[in-house]
Length: 163
Image 1: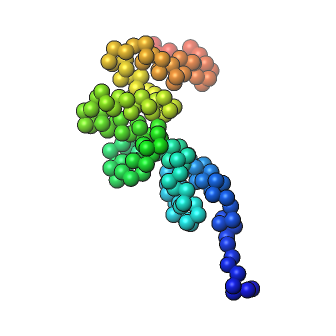
Image 2: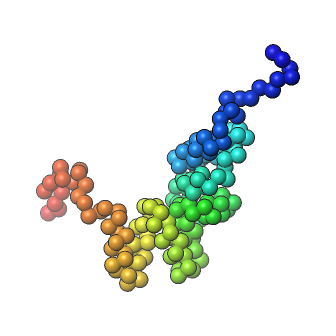
Image 3: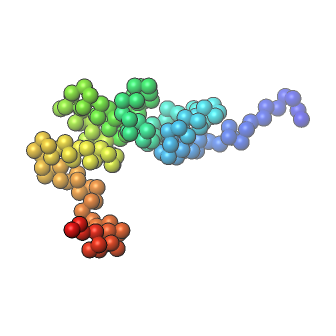
């Protein structure tokens, strides 16, 4: 082996666009896996601040416990700047219910709902209904497709009636 030759890893040889795509796909599934991925090597870590990655990063753990986002303010700020629906939902929930900024942060919940975030669609619909914006609230509720009878309920038939 020639000591003057610099060897590059197979990962380093991949185009940066492909590395960003890899990190984005991992981030959609799990924030924990995303975190481990970007820490694993500098080539993948370079994609951590990519717009596509931050826009689709799965923040499900923070959606379940919005107040815990205080430990993750930097990633939240980056995700908000890239219109991540989960980040908008979290900010909207905190500001609407915890900080009592009802008018301003109904907007953030709306952005999340329009981005397809299921919890946000439900919450936004309910808040619109409570504020008297019935037709708009019904429109969002219909996106959840609850009006359709689930297949398991069709099989149950009349046995599900309470007497």
